[in-house]
Length: 320
Ligand code: MG
Image (cartoon, rainbow, N blue to C red; front, side):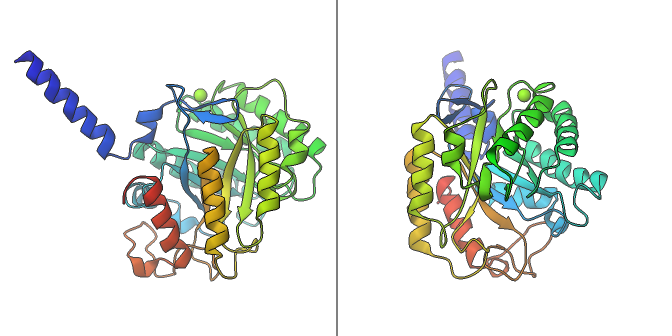
């Protein structure tokens, strides 16, 4: 009888782990080994998910309802809170409100058992403010395996030397409170100059990965070549923002070019995030204005990029 009960309990536990989307329960604390993101058992993990648009322009989607919808219906295992820094209503001018928006998403991600990227969505350097923000965030959330820090969305004009110095200061601020969670470092020129990073990486810290961003109708083979070069030099990559249209976020989706990127990411087990959960009149915004602020979306609420991204995410999350 005891054996039968044991078998039944084991079988029901297996059902839970196979049937539910519970990525953090399954993978636990992430770390970096060589160029790979690995889980608590040392197996390589490939995260897939979506990014919110800038919180200052699309705060209406920054709530628990959308996190639950994206987890349960789209099958994502990571979500990115893009905290705008420089614009009006961004972190520099409205720090408390901004942090509250981001923390709403972090708390909802923890509740939904998915990973969450806290993205300092800036294009310029604000060392003191970033170090203070991430220090407070790491103190509050550093013990949660769910959290990933992205310390500089897309540097534009700053040299790698400058970005590197900035990154080291922010990494130190995080590591005072959180010794282990993954930190994503921004690469020069909109996260594209990976070849420069590869020749002079940051030394002395564990669990760092470098961001590569692509927009498939603009960026192709030559950017993947840079990624290949970086990986050949032992640089771990994380695609924290990407999509199928032009770099402007607009214009037609190039499905062929996009699928070449997806095949490359799958081949190298590179985690990827697609841009963005917002409702602007542009190709990359995945939602229409009709989309409810707290989820409950039908196909009619999704734009072309939303329909395709949902399909890709469900496929990656084995929901098809
Ligand atoms: Mg930690």
